[in-house]
Image (cartoon, rainbow, N blue to C red; front, side, top):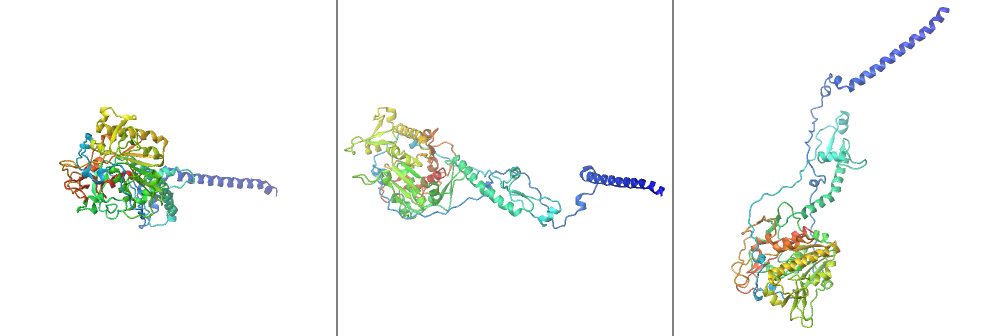
Length: 561
């Protein structure tokens, strides 16, 4: 009994030692296994993972694509929207032309002889033709990385193989990797393919506005005057037969004796940039609640009629409103026609108007009681119409040029004034100098008004070239060519051929709408000898057939507003 009592404590101590030893061995084994898995040195002694786990033959791996540069706006993933034209309906017949004597438009054979001292009008720079390569887009498209393995997402997770689906480039992935918490990105991990696709669409839609803005900025920097004429079977933009509501018969060559209409199939393609395709519905939407005004001579009136035909696609538009009274464009007492026209498209509250001002300066009757005596031609004052209605205009296009000759001044009884008194400066009295002085004065005044009218966009359109050969309009001059691009099709020069216009607009907020050189190579587009009412031997190598070259002027204008 005493011996058993002595052995009891020793037995308990022995069992405690066994238990402690077991725990120590268990901890060491755990540490050893953990160290084995974490140590690269030890794991390298084992067979490779691929040897332990062979993938089935029907499973294909997806190689990683090399890193590519992708614009952050994902602009290459979106498509251009094409909006169908909304046809406007009939409107009152276009009234006859302006009150001021415009012999050039209706009776060129009765206009006094033009005395042109302005070298820029007589000798426009000749444009040479050369082949240039088309510049490619500066975007790099990245194809979607596709999942080609046949196993499911759950299987891939089980095998420990991560999947990264990227709709974009490596830069996009890095960008979204660090995006704030909760922000949707275009990159997701396995198990969320449908969610990822939806989020990618959201990214594209979210970036669409910035893409359009970037494209607009790029177009603003484009030199639209440099490029080439190309054949486009989608042209013309309207029918010369159909646009009778807006188009004067004297400019609709489809209604004349002309038989060759290849000139209608040409489109201007600027170098290094894409010119937005004109559509009437897009124009009206862009000009919603706005007014576009053309102020200038008969070529300005051609551009006005061209735009009206382009907006309506040459269809009758009965819902267009005549709002000429709002701008004082009414037939004066004793007159035959108003000084211009103004029409409003009620669907978008868009107004397009034209005001006749061939000299682009203020004309004031010296005797109010007898305005048929003489007019003071204030070279240093803009037209009174501009001073009165500038606040109502959102886009303004000015032009002048071909009325600056002694014959026109005498026929219209215009007397040059500077500083409110008759001009005595012989340098200004020269026709070319007087024109340049007036252009600079008007552009300078307009530039000074821009801070007062921040909504206003202003353009000065360069001179439209004449193509009389072997004489002038009244001395046997002609333009018989009817073959497009026979004298050239490409313009490579950087500077405008109209140096006076370029000089006047340089350094101002008035933009130059440079159409001179691109029109210079289109000698086949004039009315020429095909006018029905023309006198024998008299050709019109100044005005253009419509549809025709002035449509391109409006396309370039549309691209910049």
